[in-house]
Image 1 (cartoon, helix red, strand yellow):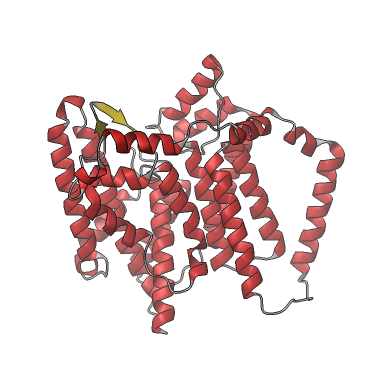
Image 2: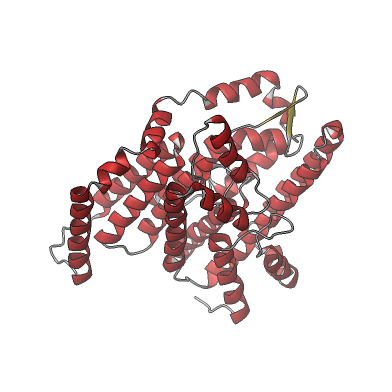
Length: 401
């Protein structure tokens, strides 16, 4: 495997630090690495042009462009032009990240485990702050994502109207972090070496963030993903090992001691008796906002077959009313048409990996796309593109080897 240039290494690690840890760009809500990837694409046009994904991505983008123009003209009275163009640019630039990541992973296998752990620590730390002091949490999130007024308005609504305040990391939708964190944890567990202590810590972090986000779909995804992971471990284990490393031994003892202290001091029982956990469980049991009802309403109001070739742009206007699809499948078809949708799904979800267990990290993102759109959260989309590029190149190199 060839070494990449120093410039490529810099671009790669800068992008990772940006999408996992840095704030959005202040003036316009875009990743800071947007300018870096744009420069890389311009200076490496030949690499992009001869990429395996190039032709299909170009066709997909053309249908997206035509849909954006058509929808902007058709629904111009609703003021959708700006948002339609913004989303088109967002998705187009996201495709450029795919070109770079696939090129980079074809040359090198970077050790990403540490930065993935940094992201998880960041997510959990903000979740703890959210539970302890929602006001400070809201202020910090507003600094990280100044263009997102939803975080601040959610806090105000919870105070003024008694709405349940949910943890959403620095992102717009609280459900997104619930799915994303599980997917990233599955990626770590499947593709990197982990000892028993790490698995326990990752499991604990996953459960804690799910309680804070209060995402019903997140819990379903959590159950499916972890069951698949344990089945994978059972099937692939060759023989039981009775050799315990020093790190695992001392780590296990530490976990037992901490657990004993938490139980004995009453901290654990206080947490499970807290309003946070009660609200999360109540929302899980009484989730009346059925996604299927929303989907059926959209399908009944406007036939999906009207969008066989093109859609009406990112902002879905149906019968004169702006609709949130709450499903990436419906959103993409109504926004950009069936042809664009098929190409998008092939590139990001049906990409022909030979070993089915490699799809385990994809489950979380597929369910997020299915139940919660996902693609509108820029950094979440880029994180998933990173994982997709890694999976595809690992599989491709194994087949060639």
